[in-house]
Length: 267
Image (cartoon, rainbow, N blue to C red; front, side, top):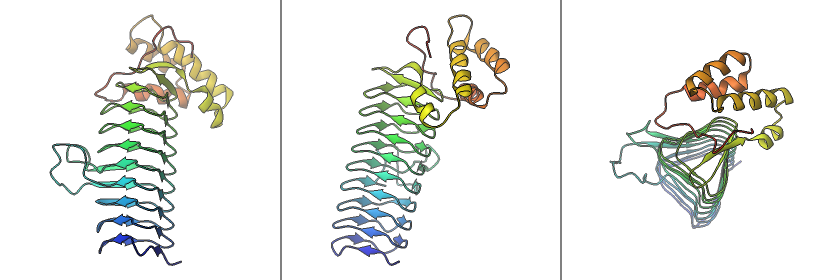
């Protein structure tokens, strides 16, 4: 089907518009933008830069997508912003492209919800089915796994990694990595346990949850070093994919430490 572009919208020459796209009043679309089939830009949305919107994305009024990164080192390099299919970007959200200091690309996965006033900085990598609640802020180079929820008014420090299925509580400041399936909260985030509610909602089995509970208690016990505890968990749970995902995450290279429990774990 043909696309619908309101007569007050500005779509610059060179922009690639897919089928059945709807661009509302007073929108602006830059010359290097690519918009996939079925996407909707509500009134006053702005998409610019080398931005690619997947099919069936939806951008709400006053969102700013693809403008110059908030990085003083950025020198106009031809970096990109790629947004997966079905992702929703709500009012006043801001998403920036990558920089030469990263991989020249910011990427948001499919079926995400970027809520009102949220910010995705340069060179971030966001997985699928991620929710950034109102005014959540991601610093540059942040990596967010699939099915993560970042609570409202939370701030994630540059270069932090958040593992898949993790939960960041509202008004939390996260300066260290968050393990997959973990739940963190606090002015300076501490690990408050596992995201049990999220695991149940997403269909993880009782056995998988039981394995995660036991591994969590062992990983964050007071005895021994982290490396010793990692070795013990690897040996005891080597046949558990969910537990080994945590082990591999902790063993991966990172510039940040791993969030720890505030007190004895009760996962």
